[in-house]
Length: 80
Image (cartoon, rainbow, N blue to C red):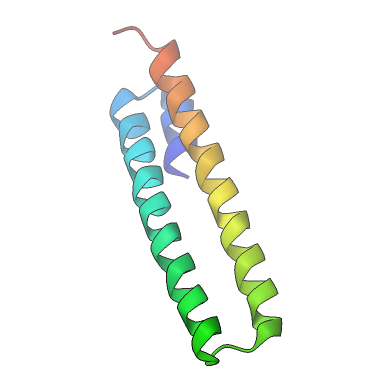
């Protein structure tokens, strides 16, 4: 929603925050992914749950990337 608000208002500050949050999500994504791999290796996660978890994380990553793209487009289209 932050990137949509940035787009609607052509707000540079909101667009920068949206991009910052996407970078934070990327960091968390890789951390969660590794934690999940560790759970699978330890046998504490059912293999069927792997598909659900992996697909949910991929979907959230795509949403995060789209939000970043919107933020970047606001930054490029607004006067400096």
